[in-house]
Length: 145
Image (cartoon, rainbow, N blue to C red; front, side):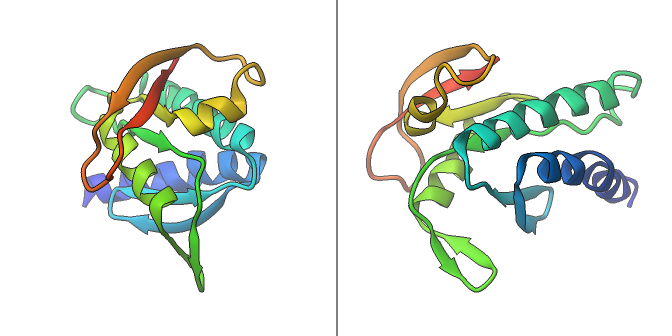
């Protein structure tokens, strides 16, 4: 129950304000994760970077066992809109990239990298072509620092 309370607190105090500042829409919560939609690739990555920085600060004074650390995966792709929910390859690739991120890290697809390169102050580390679970093609990926 303590972990769930801390997750809710981080969502209210940290995630929701960052999303509001970057035009993100919280589509749904998935247990300890979230599906978020952005109209802009630059806004999506800017929000991801800001959120990870805010969370690093929030965890700075926490005992190691109490810190909650998130991983983020971002992709630029087609979506299927079904009411208030999103489905499709764009969602699936982002979810699989999240699984490749280190705790506290961000992994983006090559498609998103092409859209944001030179537009944000960030360093990108090429991760090569990744074989992702249930994705038919390899996906070029980058770690964000």
